[in-house]
Image 1 (cartoon, rainbow, N blue to C red):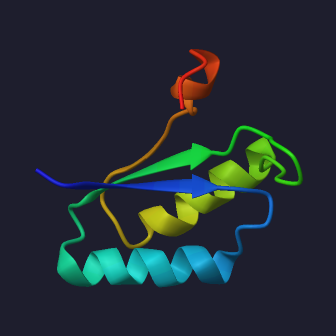
Image 2: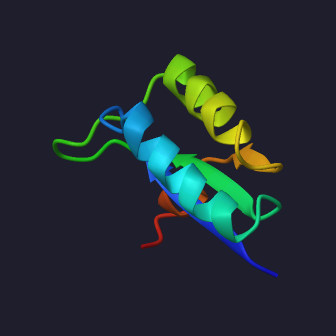
Amino acid sequence: KIYTKWVITAQTTPEDLETAAQLVAEIDPAILAVLQPVTPIAGVLAPTPSQVLDAQAQVRAHLKDVRVIPQTHKYLDQR
């Protein structure tokens, strides 16, 4: 089994998502893509909910299984 995890920020561009989605789809469009909105840290902004949903829709145009989950390790104070 294989999956990909993509940490997305407010600065993640549609072009970045398109390139990544195409690269994964060339291997196998059934590969799971997990999108994780970044937990804000110094200088790194989290995407808005709208940006996250737009990213999911864009990637879903290329891959069959695209999920959004939070960075739970941050909530558990793990690195």
